Image (cartoon, rainbow, N blue to C red; front, side):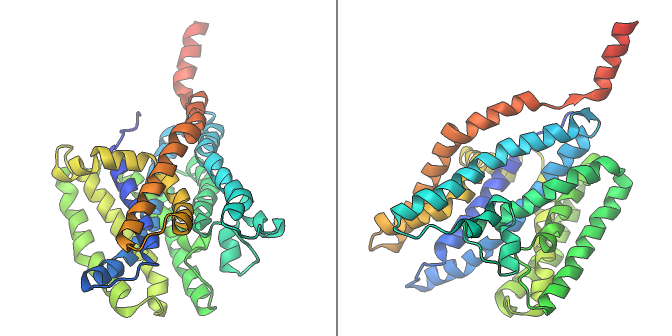
Length: 366
């Protein structure tokens, strides 16, 4: 079947990127009024934008894989298309971080032994187990997604949809149990691949629901109840009242946040196309922001550092605006003049229907 394109999800992707940027940009913000103190406190929730990325990726990647598992070149096309999207900017930024930026900021170039984990997408392992690694700290989430891409196509290919649900539940339970173990061992669970896979697996559930035509206006109430009645109050209490140092919060918060975003995405997908929320998510600004969101995520710490060194003013508000603007400019230039060149190559790895080709061959033989 031909996959339906949800352009409102570009808006959600944009919101996820903006959440992460707001969180990082406000960390050094020194509020001088109650209003800005409140804004800074709320900005902490922007850290969950990464979880929103995970849930959204789990949904989008799973629906692509399920839809194309019967096609010629299933594995080749998937991996090459993902490589063309992720690798060029990823490795360009590593080159900038290791060999260009240190000269600009008068910093020391890390030893190759400290860089190697980033080249191999093992930086989140290095962070979790305190290995000697130096590189872009926010790249841990890209490692988690790449690890998911490595094994998930094989799972989709080998198992039926019925068994896929069991595997998804198994991944969620395993991630939860591993968090319990690692928290008790005083290990960080925030960046580790296998303690964050449940977010991607929860996103995969959305793809299963889509196959069952679950996203209809009749089912909106179920997602609203899930969103408002259970998870949002729980997350609000745990994140803003109890604090991150609580053991139970470290174990369960990623699961709860993931299900909150699961409910949010499900709710949006159930809305009619002319709904006010969908119109907002399909606005020019959000759709474009979603298109360049990968660049926004990758470049925003660099933009922050450069602006802090060369464009710093006495006004914190102006500094924030400069940093956001610089990030947008970098991401837009990167998308149009660098990333797009590789994205155009994806046309050589389009999915073709194996069964359709077999029918054509039979007709030619008759």
